[in-house]
Length: 298
Image (cartoon, rainbow, N blue to C red; front, side, top):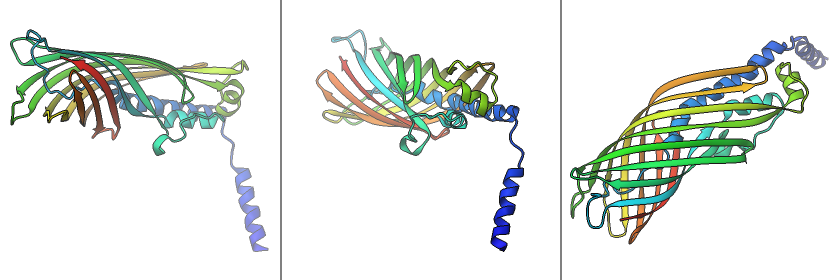
């Protein structure tokens, strides 16, 4: 009898709880989106700098025989958290195809690019540029578009010889901008998130982002037969901004942050052709990523 009475009291207590108002449901939904914007601002710099690192610390002088330059392609990636967007989707009965990638509500955001590096003249330096563009529909349930551009300079403090490795310092600027689109069900937005929207079937979430990263680095490398292992450490300052718009709601969040990464890898060298594989880890954000590249280099 006591057990039955306890169950009755518990059921009564649950029923007596006040239901969330439309304003509260809407605040919960937009709060999840705000959290997503903050995640973007924190983690987007890691994707902006994915790739752009060649195993050679210093490729040599442009004015030489042969001239020292190289061109190639690469595909970097970094872990991109989606927990805020997943929470918003869950609230209104939507699903994102993240499948908790590697145990987290995240996706591997890829950064395919074309790269060019040329040697310097007189002084031991080289310069590189990198351009990337991506347009992916239904990428883990999202429509993702972005472009990135970077330029960097490296100066050789020590040039490699029989014993010593290459030791270089460098400075780089990296810019990335893009958008993410996701469709919510109009009826679910009205009933579960308190939006006043026409029942058009789908309400689109439009999200825009951009970041500028200024990075300094030091890198050591050494060619051993057909392999060139390398290791580097960077520090950066990033200014990021992201915004969303859905129905009658919009918000913009701007952030700036400092970070530090360690990266390393090796290239496999076959005459003028080099295949490069690397990984990196951000000490501040805890984020990680990698890069695979191939290039022809004189």
